[in-house]
Image 1 (cartoon, rainbow, N blue to C red):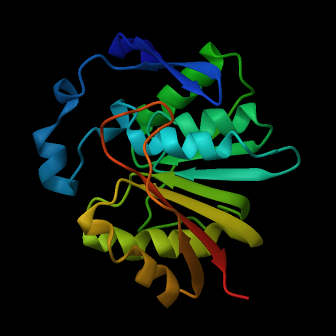
Image 2 (cartoon, rainbow, N blue to C red):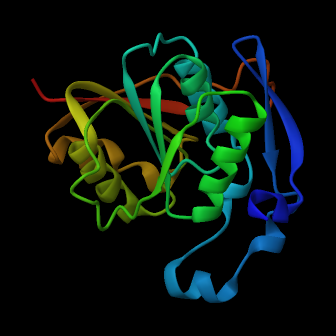
Image 3 (cartoon, one colour):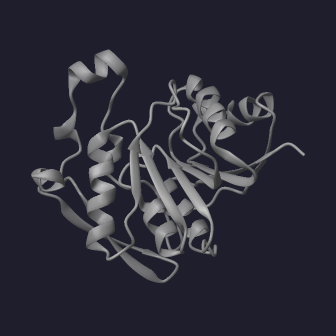
Length: 215
């Protein structure tokens, strides 16, 4: 049945004045698997679109991706990846959860976008053939302190020499060590002023860490 087994419902999100239809499972809590959580801290955060993904997608929408490659880490339903494909990037979307990748492929097709390459990726065991990308992006993936070091390591492995990484985060306390983790890995970090998605008047403010290789 593919992604249809979740009986997905539509959520319309406007990015840079252009709407996207994001199809998602209707009840994230119904997807919680207690055994999977106990074994590997798995919670189905992938099953919705969060503010960090919207802010990141708004930033990507301003770019011209023609001739460039983009990797999304921890993509969930892949709003940034979808917007990147619309902007002309050759996109690879990755996540720890295969159902999330089913959602990315489903949403790309429903929105009439070019096919997006997808692959399961465990940050603790990055495959040698992952390649390097002009842009590496991630939204709201720093849930625990140890994720900062893991994410910095993956960015170091996947970012092209002259590439740029964008990591959006809703100012989580547990993400506070991410800048230090990047610098320890030999990366430079600048952080934007936190803001909400365009038009939003409440909800979390999101900052974007802009990461490059040290000159």
